[in-house]
Length: 218
Image 1 (cartoon, rainbow, N blue to C red):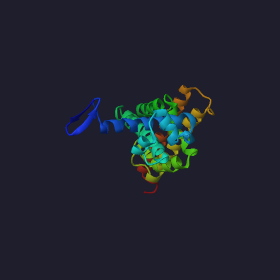
Image 2 (image 1 turned 135 degrees about the vertical axis):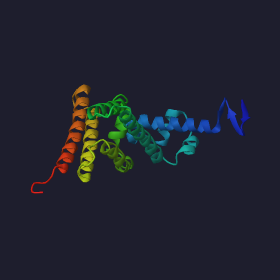
Image 3 (image 1 turned 180 degrees about the horizontal axis):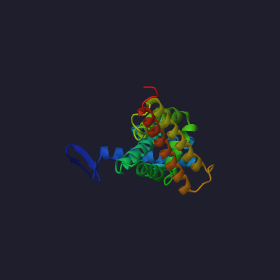
Image 4 (image 1 turned 135 degrees about the horizontal axis):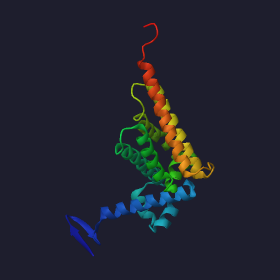
């Protein structure tokens, strides 16, 4: 039964705001699963309402359109990935190899252990123009994470290019594995990614040391 609590009507112990938040989360999860399992084209107002057993009215209570829902689902996975990487690095000793292994392990746990999330994040932006445009806007947030782990004092432009190349290369590797076109064991994939991160760190460290050396003739 309903009752008043703090001026807000409750039903079954939950407020209207609680129920709206729950419905929104259900719609996001449905879109995430549909896009990851069947492709972004499978996400429609009808399909997510059918999966969540909600009416159109409740869909439009949370999202103005199918595209708004799809972008929100994509953003939720991207935020989860960024947070996983940030937390893994913050909780690890500052040695480059330890941080590289922690970051790769955290990303693998997200995109390989929950492959529908990996496909939504890494593959579907190539199939859906709405996601594609949004993924380009999100790229800097991931390159900044990588940039922050590379050697300071190296050439800024060179370090930035290294970060972009590493993010793009790692994304392509994981996407290839998820598609099934890259037929290697998970263990070999993880180790290769760790070595790529370490090579990028070493390259910027070498650049930093070269810049510190006095020029001949000085």
